[in-house]
Image 1 (cartoon, rainbow over the protein chains, first blue to last red):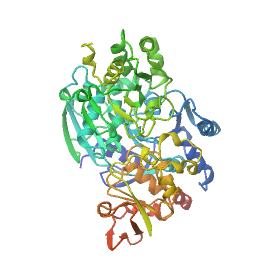
Image 2: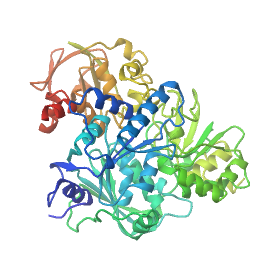
Image 3: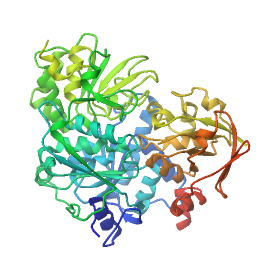
Image 4: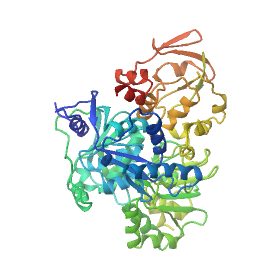
Length: 419
Length: 157
């Protein structure tokens, strides 16, 4: 019987020749990522709850401070210090202030064919490089850190066959929001989402990361793509080799197959307070905004900043809007500086921040107040996600967010030409 | 008997415990903010042995283990929902908080009704009604029986 990409990676990690949906396997993990959202609790459990505390293979661990960096309070500073000191004592790879964890992982660590646990739900982003990334809590993380292993139920797979090409002015983010709207916030619960077909070749690595990263918003356990020349070129640029390259077998079994024509996708907005609450962006035209955010592991890459900068060059941020621009990593930030993009944003009146989770995390930077409205390239629009429990978050592409920042209300990029 | 605190569909982990409290040093310091955005009085009113009952996809969103941990720290005996989001479900079992799938309970009860869960028998009694729950997969039942994943790890050694 044929296997999906998810089944092949789990079979490899379990040391068996075949794995199929519904089976439980004990697996060896290739990489373990944790960030400052939960690592302080992991360390406390390691020190006080584990009978025989040890780290099976310290080389596999990567710890990244990205959620509340720089620290916003003495309590945060104490949690960061705990993480920093533990990493140093045990020789754990440690990145602080270098960017959002998933962007740093893509730039520096993820290899095709790996099985990766991340103590963060958006770990499914790694499927853009053909790796099985899945989000776990800190207890699962701790068990894996101590033993190097865990157990997994092999997920069923939803297959998305992509054809055609996205129209001009429509982005990967519009595509994945459309898909989440179609299958719902629990449409892929416990399942893998696998993307393929001829349309995949038209999508850049940045597009692919944006797509895989957001799959958890449909409940997915992981997201996966085959490793093609685009992925291999990205690896080469970042000086890495694959662990293993998989594609699904012709006779692999899928729980469901969806055919998506990329040329039919249009600019999308996810309205408060659910990611699957999607509508054509044009229907939100005129909704007044207080803040706009261009950044996050979903949409803070150089390609996204280029889209925003091209639109805002020679224009100004609306005087009634705070526009926060936050490159997803230090590499992205430096590249944006070299290209003059940060100058463009600053001259337009944007606030350019250090690489971090920023507004998407709703606790460190750009927190919005009661009744305020945010349009964001972040990952979520849950109630209170960006600050006050009675505030409103709309999700959209870098183009729609930037156009809205200029207009002071929700607008798509093509509306700017009418001004 | 415990009191039911009833919540809707798609309760995400940001509603259970908001981001701004996650880096507090301990779960005990976070727990007073549980469900703050949905019901600011929840943490004060909930008693040891009470239950959270919800509709579909409870615990969707982030992987923050603080979400099941604050519920357990407040004494919530179990969460019973029509369905759970994957990461929350696994995290809850890992910390020893029973998460029970029961399709019928949500529509049959009101907020603040009384109920009792008989975990061994897999039944729920409320008023004169009785419901059976879906059993946990054997792998997860074993972890729960041992008191969570770390207890299970310690037992292996």
